[in-house]
Structure formats: C-alpha cells, structure tokens
Amino acid sequence: MRVTRLSTTPIKGLALHHPESIRVDETGAVGDRLFYLADARPSLVSVAKSGALVGIRAAYDASSRRLTLREGDTVLADDEVRLGEEIDADFFAFRTAPGRIVESPFAAILSSRAGRPLELVQATDSLRGHDVEPLTLLGTGSIDQLSHVAGAPVDARRFRMLIEFDGGLPHIEDTWIDKRIRIGDATLIGGGPVQRCAGTTRHPDTGVVDLKTLALIGEYRGRQDSIFGPGFNFGVYARCVEPGEIRVGDDVIMAD
Image (cartoon, rainbow, N blue to C red; front, side):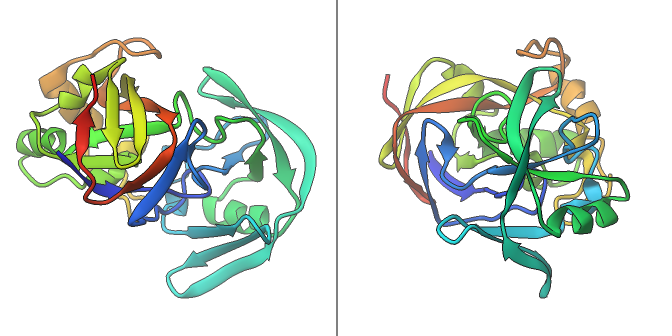
C-alpha cells in the first residue's frame, strides 16, 4: 500500500491543496486547518453549509502571517492576519473550538460569497479546525467499492481526507484502530471511523450537490456506530505518535 494523494487547506471548508509532502505531528499536518468559519451563534460553518466556498483557495504564510484568497487566477484578498476578540465555536455539539476572530477583509468576502454573515477564526487549541482527530486515512479500495455501488467513478476528494492510499481490501482502514502505522518518517495510531455528513454530497470543485453519497454508503454498509452515534462511516481518524514527513508514494506499513 502506498500514499496516492495528500489533501490540506489552511481554512476548513475551502478548496484543497494537494502537496507532494506534508509534515505531521501531534497537531496534524503542519499548516492544515489553521482557520475555520463560524456563524453568529457561534457554530462551525462546514462544507455541508458552505458549498459556495469550496472553489476559493486559501494560502497562508505563517512567517509573515499573510493570508491570500484566490478563485482561479483572481486574487480576492491578500492581507496580514490581525487577531481580535476571543471566540468559542461549537463543532457539531461534539467539542468547543477556541479561537480568535480575524480582523481583516476576509470575512466580508467569504460572507458575500456564502450569502450569510461569517467570521473567519484562527484556532488557538492544538486540535485547530479538526473535528475529532487531526489525521484521516482512506483507501482507494473503499472508493472503488463505493464507485461500484454508485455505478460510476466517485471522486475521493469529496471526502476531504488528509491521506489517501492504494492497495488493500475495501475499508481495510477500518481494521487499523489502535494499531501503529508507519508512513514515511512518521508513525500514526489508527483511530475510529469518520462519520460522514452532507458535505460529501457536494462536488469538490463546484460545491453543487450532485451525488447521494450518504444513501450510497448506507446501501451497502448500513448505519454503523461512531463517536457521534449511528451513521454513515467512510474512512478513519488517526493521530501522530512519531512526527515526520509523509510523501506521495510512501509505503503504508503496519508496524504492529
């Protein structure tokens, strides 16, 4: 089994980057999900609620604290990140994500595009903009099985997983809970299943709802338990116990 794709984004819910390598530690992939979007309650605004934003790409330079938003070749905003008041946002009634509101033009641009008031928040805890665990894994065997049920190829990007790999039976990653996994220079511990939301029904480039992903998963997997209770699981969480670099093409090796 080998890594086939890596997916990151500095702002949770925006367009994904696909780097050739990432460095992972106990907080996840360096630079991934540093920011998130919140509504007035405040609660996380996820891909399920913000399909209009998935085509906007963010780039963040931590050394200069400069954030850039682009859509295609058009620069929508390019400014320094200036932090304002503290905020605690609700993440799916599962955890509270502390952060600080970014005082800049970014929120106005993203609010206009989403058609609702949003705040851009820089997360201040070690989990950042992640939901349960900072790393996620998904095998192409699982995607192939879902594609078979769908009767057409399913784009794995709609699941927004950090690490994708080839080889292995469908849902082999489900068997890795509490097992040590060596990928590149890093060692991970496999976690529980990722319960999917309606965000996976959206096309990864346009944000348009175009596939009944949850119904398809349920058709052949049924409802399964997760940390959120019964639901439609696809892919697994993981955490890093030995930091290091992971590259596309690295072997995925069971260390236990």
